[in-house]
Picture 1 (cartoon, rainbow, N blue to C red):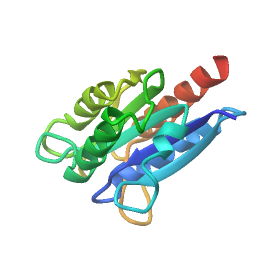
Picture 2: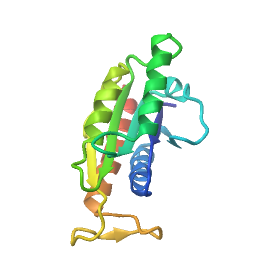
Picture 3: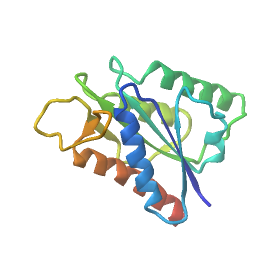
Length: 168
């Protein structure tokens, strides 16, 4: 069965909510397995080699991905260079959250994914995670909120990736 691995970092819980929505989208397609992993928790980096597709998510941190996500990607790049990971030919997607600084993490993640030899599949999802505007329509028990449109886009990303694997 094809497998998608979603690897994300989250500081306030917002990007984690996005990751869960991406996983929901993957789960909406029969015949595709999904695994969700947070950077900084224990899982083997080789999991990305075993997957058919990789989806990465990060909040924007000073105009970039978080240092933890960058370290993860750099480790993967080192292993790929040492020919311990075979990533070429895989497909991938990206998502990110942001507050005041423009949402650049998703675009940076896309560039980093390509540097691993992974073909980026749209849509790239970047969502505002800043509290306090009239656009907020759902809040979970941790106070994390996104408007439903942002979460819908995350589900769409997961569904699109899963459908690509089922069709191949």
